[in-house]
Image 1 (cartoon, rainbow, N blue to C red):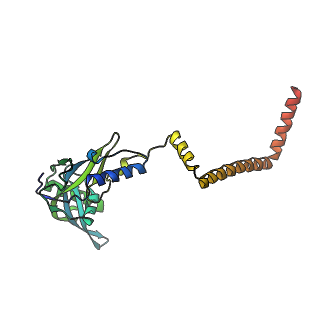
Image 2 (cartoon, rainbow, N blue to C red):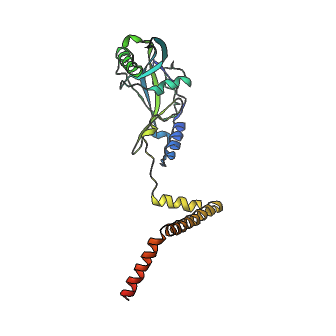
Length: 242
């Protein structure tokens, strides 16, 4: 499948992506069986630009310059894309570099946002972020670059992992799974199989009992007058109704 525009080369194959996703999901308590065939590849366009900002505060001038990326489909800034430049450089590769043996669904997204619209959105974002006027912001080297991502649809989540450095971009949408009582009980039984863990559990159990007894005795000593009268009243009630 040809793509005659600059893009980041794919460094992560579907099998590696599946393993990373399984590992990350397990951290949140989910045991999904993910196969490489479950993943599909999306290649999405971004407008990448260098920017230079002249900030004047109390007659002290400061220059801020960096790169920024704007999604050419939803018109949103994505700072994660710029981090990819630390791992790879975009080049023109006509064919998608996925092994022919892999039966992979490949989706190439077409840009919706034009370069002129992108520059306007980027400037607006930078003006707000740095609290400057439009004439204090200058853009240069604006170009369209495509970014490959592996994606998967699960029953509850739709996850995306970049195909260059292997980072799950929307991992924060996954809530921590609450363990059931059965799972917690099984964990306890699994732990006490080990002699050291069993000793720890028994030690904590006895410590808890002793602390409870100590708390009761301390409470009685501190409130001995109240306890005394409670006992007298209880005895009187007993004797009256005997």
